[in-house]
Length: 198
Image 1 (cartoon, rainbow, N blue to C red):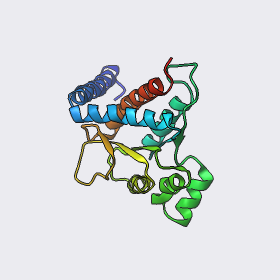
Image 2: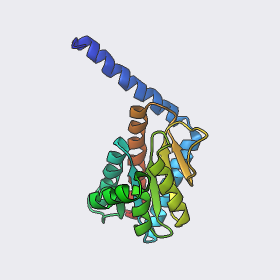
Image 3: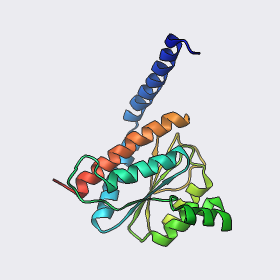
Image 4: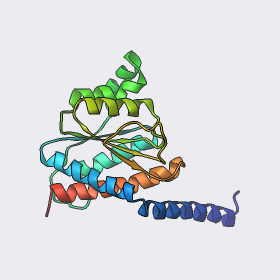
């Protein structure tokens, strides 16, 4: 597998898979509409003094911190104010205490219940949509009057309930995560432009 031509072929194959998924996503009207609405609702919440919460597991946890960083720091507008975005689960003392004393399914929900107010927004990232802690945080968010946005993979009957579902038409975790980052950057760009017009 060390042959340069073989490795090049693998890279080109992965790039082509991502290109194909982007093209499929471009034709998914429901996903496009949900993405635009998620950006609009998030910007409105922030303009009303609300906070955006973001969470995910594994690679999706990395994307959660990435996206919160894009909003706290500058995304495109280098002179705008910091926007209120919190990546849940990164207070290690709180997360480990909740996981130990309750269960791992509560790590996001417990933090959200302490911090969220009606009118806030939650972006929950789960490539499968089946993660117990994602399902639980969506339940708690709904109970607290928080608008919920689920970024996930191909739709299936077991998807948890959310106000908006951004379902990338794939079941391959790496490809889903790549498109979640594209969608996340779009959300950040629009939220930034609607909350901090130049």
